[in-house]
Amino acid sequence: MAQNTGKARSSRTSSATRRLRIGLCLMLALLLVVGAKLFLVQGLDMGGMAEAALKNRLTPTVLPAERGKILDASGNVLASSVIRYNVVVDQTVNTATATFPRIDKVDGKDTVVKIPRDQGIEELANVLGMKKDDVKNALTGTQRYYIVAKDIRPDVEDRISKLQIPGLASEGTSKRVYPNGSVAGGIVGFLKDGTTGQAGLEQTQDDVLKGTPGKRVFEIGADGLRIPVGVDQLTPAVNGKDVKLTLNSDLQYFAQQAIQSQKDKLSAEWGIIVISDVKNGNIIAMADTNAPDPNDPGKVDAKDRGVRAVTAAYEPGSVEKMITAASAIEEGTSHPLDTYTIPPTYTVDGQTFSDAFEHGTEQRTLAGIVGYSMNTGTVMVGQKLSKEKRHDWLQKFGIGEAPDIGLPAETPGILTPADQWDGRQQYTVLFGQGVAQSTLQTVRAYQSIANDGVMLQPRLIDSYIDPDGHEEKVPAKDSRQVVSKDTAKQVRDILESAVTEGEIKDAAIDGYRVGAKTGTSESPCDDGKPGFCGYTASMVGMAPMDDPRFIVEVVLQRPKGSIYGITNGPVFRSVMGQTLRTYNVQPSTGAPVRLPQYAK
Image (cartoon, rainbow, N blue to C red; front, side):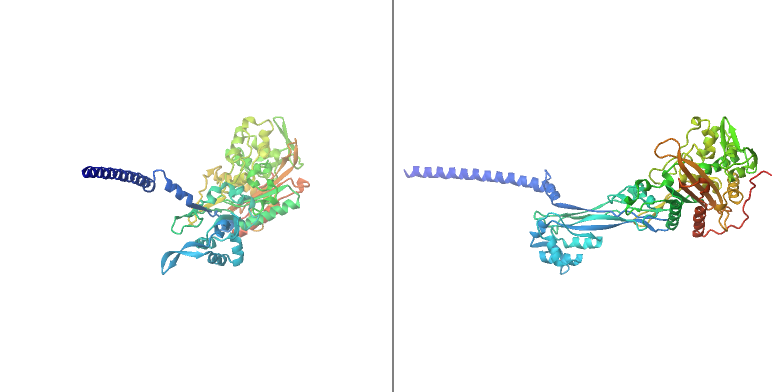
């Protein structure tokens, strides 16, 4: 009996041991599964959960790039930007925080310390220069977004960031300022919503000026507090490049005042003045009336916010006679002192032409035809060239080709193919009708004559300047020889004689030899009605003629009063004189050219 009892007890012990072993095996298996899972999640992170969790804790802040400046030729600022910050707070986070962690120096070592909220408020108030109670009120409440301070400088924002106050953040803004107001306002342009170029160079050079924003990323815990030893990454912003122009802002101001006064005096619709350097094609000034102030462009009509010197195409009138004279001389069909018998009216191919003044039959030289702006004589000179040659010479002088100086909406003008000219247009193009061009296109044509027949493409943008100060010059576009040096000299003699012996005596400047030409054309009505509504009056000239340095053109659209009593001579004389003085151009020493206007 005892023996049976012992066997039973031994059997129960063995069964319990097996159950214990099985249980231990199951526990070990479970621990192995859990361990493996932890290894996969925390060690290998196959599902990216840790990475996703980190991303959820990262808070990025955009650091705006500083927009590049727009400068005149001397480095004077026409447009600049300042970076400012708005300090904002999530009051729900800050209010709920009694203390917050921050890395401070303790015994020379970086140590995470607990900062009382009240201390953080006091430190923030000191940095902002605000009262402590005002800052505390701003940080306390239930609003998720509240502006604590505006227009904070970058150095102050950096000090605020280092305080690591919970719920506090900064928002970068850029403020564009135009210290010279309307001086070159249309050229400089302005921004849309303070960020994107809307007009002028601000628009066309937007990619160069705006730079690349930076980013600051730091880690926020579940309690909304910044983790002192967490991620803190900084990608600095790359500021935009400065754009340096060829403009002289003093002469730009002078020219704007001069043309505005002329426009107001004669109740014209608009006016333009362009000043160009003969030797390099640089645009020294390009003035419009009613120029916009980029600080508040809405104060002027939309039609006045561009640059008419490159956007407005109009019939140039008699200033085009220079091209006819140059073409005839270069082709060998005429010379400055060739004689023409000119009747009161002249008829060719059934088309009759007359002059702006009454005269009998006269013996005129080519110089006299240009000097007294005779349409009749110009047709006589030009008809010796075929229609195709007349068209080709206009094209060679840049008519029909936009100057491409980096401004919006530059017009190429209107130069109809020769085979589409009607019986009259084939002759009117010789004296600037039936063809349209911008003021800068006319200036470019005259520049080629002043520069010994070599046409230089106009330049407005001189260079780009990197944030580190490195200056990259914008190369001049290809030049081309339009006429020979000898032809250019003969045409200059004709233009100078128009001032000394012809009808343009009011362009003369004491001490300097000047060559010039006037132009008058009918202006089509803006409303699309047939016919014409007023005139376009212009004068373009160069000085000093012994070594031409500058071209100045003055244009006035639809001035009121008799066109025969309107002259841009005084304005031309004033602006050209100021330009010569500004650049210390020495007075002329040689005797002026005086080609006879009548045949002997």
